[in-house]
Image 1 (cartoon, rainbow, N blue to C red):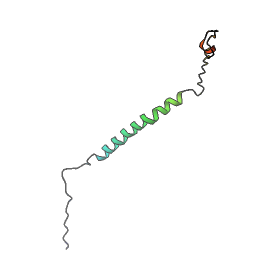
Image 2 (tube, helix red, strand yellow; image 1 turned 90 degrees about the vertical axis):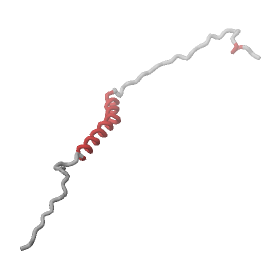
Image 3 (spheres, helix red, strand yellow; image 1 turned 30 degrees about the vertical axis):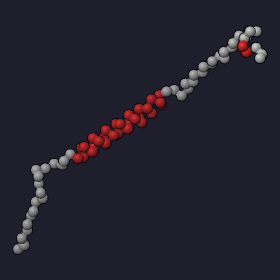
Length: 76
């Protein structure tokens, strides 16, 4: 009859995983939230502004009164 030796794997009382998957998941969620705040919120804000916003301001040209003694009318 053959002899069967069953060697169990090394165990350091770690019956569960080390939590690396949760840590990676939390980091991915934080990165997604930051990217949403940087790119998503400004995109929503600009989409809510009506495209027909048009502000026309007419600035009148200043007119100076000309008198016979003004410096612009004197000849050198």
